[in-house]
Length: 474
Image (cartoon, rainbow, N blue to C red; front, top):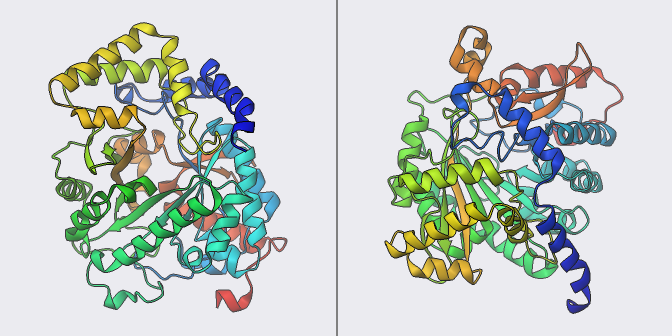
């Protein structure tokens, strides 16, 4: 059966090679680059070259958990769910802001929880399917309890909806996970069985459906679990099969917003990154590339060699490699690196990259020569080069995403640094302005500061929207 699909598969590969960069996306990227302050147009800046921003939906706000660090207002569970038409309108607006291939987080509260408990599972499948058909890459944001208890729901989201990415939030701040009561969870290692359950589920669904599925791991870091961050990183990196599934490890220092019970001695981005490096065993500065403002994100991409499980930084930190990376970003950075795009279960990325470099042979030659020099010097061991050549290597992204306190965002007009961070934000969702009726790309920190509350007030006044059953929101 696979052989009979070859003509269409090769057509898709040829189109990826011939048209590696979408013109609409390139125009949006240019506009985004022009909008950045001069000081943020750095050689290692991703915004405006590789991405516009990651979008999000303001979907169902219900969640069955009662976590100590929740950024939503206290009335979130009593707010009616948006209609399907309203969700599609949001998706369309996000698509206009991002262009094709943009990431879209399907979020609000825990949307999987909300749609399952309200008996509207097919509606969430349709939301995901609509986002895929619009040309976006949806990622379902969830604590995952509903999906682990009802794997058939996740399977339907994959098969009928086209879902390929799920972000699962797992950490010690969560109250409500079955068999893991918050008062009994003493360290993050106590939650490794939860992480392992999702790993097995993803592999099972991959095998059963023949479809790609990738997970992202979100973890809020507080003074209570800061010391355990290295243990979490080590757990993932100890088995290369885990990082084949979990492609993003995001650690988020707590922010004083929403209904968060803020720590007396809160974890800072610098201390969290130090703990991440301890877990990796690599003293990286986390600035090989930046997305938006450097105060908002810090991270690194690791190249993992599957056979032996070794890993190393994807981008060596020598000056020649940094300059080459900057030139690649400026020249062919607009190509889509979506790895879950389907070509009979495989990614079109290699064909798109080959097409992009074919248009810039000097850059391709420089890149090849630099790789050979790094191999000859031992910076890239031969097993890694062999793994790349044989398709037995993958990447995993590890970093911090630093939300701002609500009071700081409220005072942005008098704080140039805060205003700069909001202006350069790469995590923005389409939200309709109540006064003008126009759609705006709103940073998540602004949502956390006051826009969630405004949005919820509007939904509570709108009798046309459908709430969750009373038995579920009590």
